[in-house]
Amino acid sequence: FFRHFLEFIIMHDRKKVPKETLDAAQKQQLQNKIAAYQSLVAQCFELRKSQTKTKDALALLDKLQFINPEMYSCWNYRKEILKALLEGVDDQGKTALIGSELAFNTKVITERDPKSYCTWYHRKWLVQQHPTAEILENEMKLCAKGLNLDERNFHCWGYRRWIAGLQTGQGTWSEDKEMAYNQQKIEQNFSNYSAWHNRALILEHCTDVEALKEEFELVSQALYTDSQDQSGWIYAKWLAQKLPPAEAVLQQQEICDDLLADDPNAKWPMYARAHTAEMDNDGATATRYWEALVEHDPRHSQYYLWRQERTQGILK
Image (cartoon, rainbow, N blue to C red; front, side):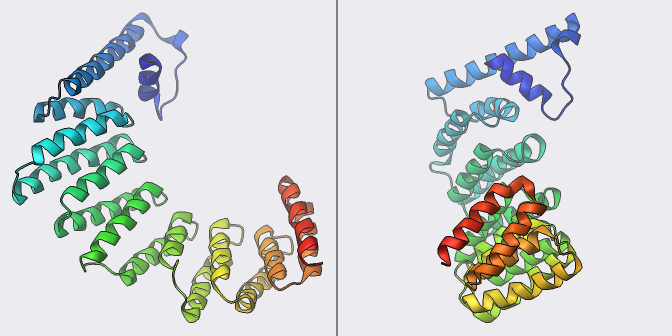
C-alpha cells in the first residue's frame, strides 16, 4: 500500500513514466522514498501510542502531513497535541499557537492539495479554538486569495460561508457584503457555477418577490452572454422555484423566446421553455420542446422522453 500510495504522491500532476523506463538509480531513489515514508508513518503512530503531546511531535507530523494530507488519523493526533498545548495558555499564547497552525495548514492547501477534505476540516477546528476578529478577518483574506487562484474551489467557498457566519455573529459581516462579493465573482466569470450556487444559498430564505425579480435581471445577463452555458440556467431554474408560478413563467419565457428567435435549436433555452410550459400547464408546448430536444440532443434523449411521458401524465 505504501509503495503504491507514494508513487501516486510523487506522480500527481506529472506525466507518468512507465516503470520499465526507470533505470537502476531511479528505482533505488523510489525505494528510498518509500522506506523514508514508511519510517515517518511508524514514528508518528508510535508517538501517538505513547501519548506524546509536544511541539517536537507536531514538527514530525508536519513532515508526514505535507506528504499525505489525507491521513485523517494524523489530523486527529494533531488535535490531541494542540488540546494539550492550549491548556492553561493565555489569549496571546493561543493566538500565537493557532496562528502557527493556520500557517502550516495554509502551506498544505496552497502548496500540496487545495482540495484536501481533512485539511479544510482541521482548519475549521483550529478557528473554533480561538475565533478572534483578527483571525476571522485573515481567514476571509485567505479565501479571497484562494478563490482568485481557483474560482470554483467548493472547499474554499464552503469555508468562506462558514467564516462569514462567524463574522455575522460578531457583527463584522453582513449579507449585503457577501452578496456584493458574490456578484463581483459572477461578473468576473458568468460560468462560475460555484458562485451561482453560493448566491442561491445566501438567498435561500428570501421571500421578497421584487428582490428575486431583480435576480432575474442579473442572471439574464449571463444567459444572453452565453446561452449554452448551463451555470446561469441552473440558477434561473432555482430562482423560478422561489417566485409565484405565473411570475416565474413570465420571467423565463421572455428570455427563452428571445434566445430561440436567434437560435431555434439552442439546447438550454429549449429545456427552460419546456420546463416553464409545464409550470404553466401548457402540455402541448412542453411536449413540442421535449420532442425537439430528443432530436437535437440525442445523447440525453432518454431523459427527454421520460420528461415528455411525465408531462403527459401530469397534465392529462
